[in-house]
Amino acid sequence: MSVTIYHNNRCTTSRAVLETIRESGIEPVIIDYMKTPPTHEQMLALLLAMDMSPRALLRTKEHSYLSLKLDDESKTDRQILDAMLEHPELIERPIVVTGKGVAVCRPKTKVLELL
Image (tube, rainbow, N blue to C red; front, side, top):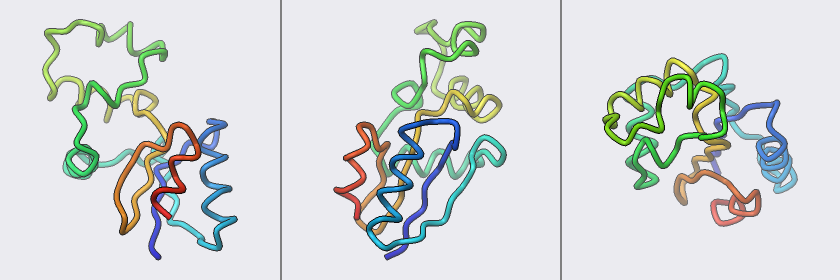
């Protein structure tokens, strides 16, 4: 089974999900999205696969969320998506992609549905 994780090693949940994947006997493709953010097209594909809007994938507790005024409901999906790609810390994590689907694995046990 092919598994890809959009991972942030500084995140406890992301590390726990990666460990769960490995414990299942799978070595996933690891994308450190803080160093290599997804492209606009990749991000749109992930959002579509998860049936989520950009706003639903935002980390609202990040400093950049408020400094960029992303709490403003008049911000468009495009503006939010652009902000997420420029400031990848705003992307909720971890996102896991398998043949069974794509999901933000919060809580960490959600990854079990994809394995």
